[in-house]
Image (cartoon, rainbow, N blue to C red; front, side):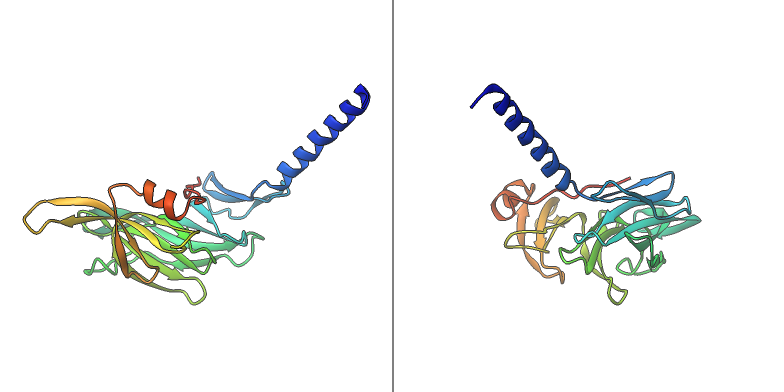
Length: 226
């Protein structure tokens, strides 16, 4: 093979690799200036909201829907850990259609019912359910789940540091940090594994790294956007 042929082959390989990498690019979402933007695989950017109070967008696994937070100006919600600036949970399609308020903040004497704001917002692997943490107790938040097909939301368990597993044997199960107490006095903070319906599977320990390496090695850590 002559040098020109080798050079041409090498150039073709580089172009093919570049096209392959471009095709593998993922759609992304971001919040900028209080608005939500969607960046498609093809490089198109869509300006989806224009209210100026939106943040923390999360893209569904199928790339069709985005959930995000919308600040409620001048409203605070009382929780066991203090007053919190109120936010709403919204959903919009990546086409920019069907903006819908999914959950409004509300106060309650029962910390299992109070909704103040939304942390660690994540979809289930099929995009039907949205899990999140809201401030609630003195020592921890409260984990809730929303069914996006019917708008029903309910409390699952006390906890913080939520992570939804999207692959492996425990797909769609929840890793939740909980503050618990020893029978003889004192307390500890461990990570526990729960089923999507809130039923406890077992203790993971102080750190979930070994558990994820064993049961979901391909798992991507949830990313917080804007």
